[in-house]
Length: 273
Image 1 (cartoon, rainbow, N blue to C red):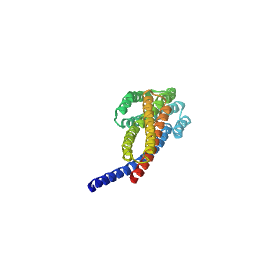
Image 2: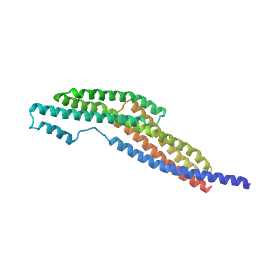
Image 3: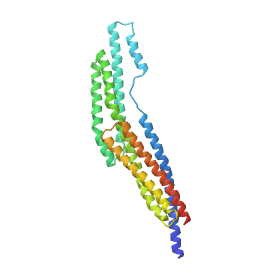
Image 4: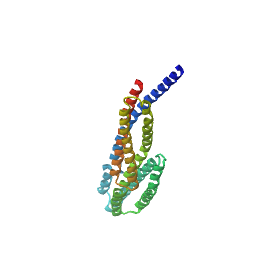
């Protein structure tokens, strides 16, 4: 009898230690999820662009206003400045694209992430080719051609590059969240096993109620996570897919809050045994 009692005590000590560890991980992960949601919102507001400074335009004005040289030389000087600024802009845009591609390629290699990567691979290639072709045109542009080129490049970026870049930025965020989702699923499943340790406790059914709430929030997180993936694959507007990603993360954070309550109640019931 003393041997069996000793085994039970050891088992309970092990369970308590596991619960404490689980309890802390739930708390920390809940906080991490909230931070993640903040970062998603912050990242969505960022819109890095390759833009010319006031100083760059002053170079053009300086060339135009250089009355110390004849008109033809002023035109050539202005054209040289404009071509240089266009090269600078296209090079910046190329660097921006390659940075986005690097961030995108660095994401986890799960099957869902692979599907997303394959979908956007051709866009990166086509966009890089576009910039290469446009860059090669700059050296042969005249003064009016350089102005038209600048307007055309801006129009193309506004209508093509920026909307897709935002969608891809959302795809990066979505991919980063998949590990969080998997960990959360595991935590919910583990919690379901743990509460059975206090099945004979007077608090058991209250704990079961909290557990159902956690499971419902987790199911909601999974649902919106899948919906976000579908929106990314169909090129839905970036602000719409981002809103769904944030909703998914909000449900995930709520699931952890409920798990936190489950673990507190389970730990309390276990101590009372």
